[in-house]
Length: 510
Image (cartoon, rainbow, N blue to C red; front, side, top):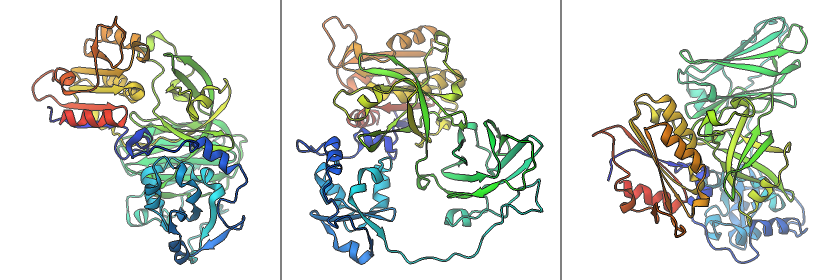
């Protein structure tokens, strides 16, 4: 119908899409749920078949265990006997068998990267892969040279990853100090750097600064040589790609060195290989939005700088009956109408989530039972939506079903506020009943307030008093919706909902 670029949420390669049903799920037998599996792992059964003995596994040995009743898989150097888990795997036995008797790390990252397999499969651990030690050249750095009191310039970046080794434009860093401050300067050598490209955490004696440069991650990870105060500032000089992190000393003494290197310090690797990093955030409010959906507000630690870019998601982690469970969620704004509601704390310290509570679910009931002040582990942002897609946009079409509305919230706010070329934003919002419509009142008020915005609600199971549109996503419903404001306008279509909904929307658009 329209030859326009579409952006589905989550994007096809996103791990959030995987959890929405992007991979094939199979019906599980009764008594084979995630909670049932957790009970099995707590039962004391020998799930490895090795009577608690850990082994070093050679490649030859791993290859022998490639049958459903004898299936070993290697993930990141650790070998697991997944045979007992076969019947509990939501993706079915065939999916697990794709990695049988081999290194399944890449396959795992494609489909399950967000899953905490160490916790889920800890009772199935056979041991480590036996590898030949590699002795690298001696690249040791004396990070505390006595003669360098005021300047922390290090030699050229030192990483083992090929990407950084072969790339002359890899980032680097330096540091300097005054009597009361320490400033860490990161030279990204890229101009498209913004504040939400930088994530800083200082906790438990560890200082960690991750800078996202295109699709790569540059990490500074140090045990600081002296104590600093909790609060710090982060500044980005966009036109030169420089990041400045200013720390406040607890004592006005001269530092002889910045600190000692920790895991992956001074590394520059593809973002997909960086792994998930979590920090503990405090639940400070929750509010009923619909009969089954709530708005949760989590406060970042005082020693964390994190801003979730538009279109990206994070992972929330809870420990449930001794097992870590991780789920992806897209943060939202606290309101579509900021003047109607004052934020509890400055927006850069709060992350808001609209979460539907499933009574029979494992994660959301536990999340809903959290008390104000309880802690939740929140990951760094993930995803690959680029805000540049919104630049010079004239028509923005948003198709959402249920909580698939959540990624649209920030896009909607940003487009109406920051895109001067924007002529029209249309939202078609699919739900079962009127009671399911998230922020209906705010959407209607926003449409009255801004003539560029229109919202249409479509219900699949309305009551007899509903006078609006009915049904499921279809060409008939979308024929009028996909009308440009002017001929040949620049258009973006964003779609989010259950996988069949998203796929149907993309097919209709084409």
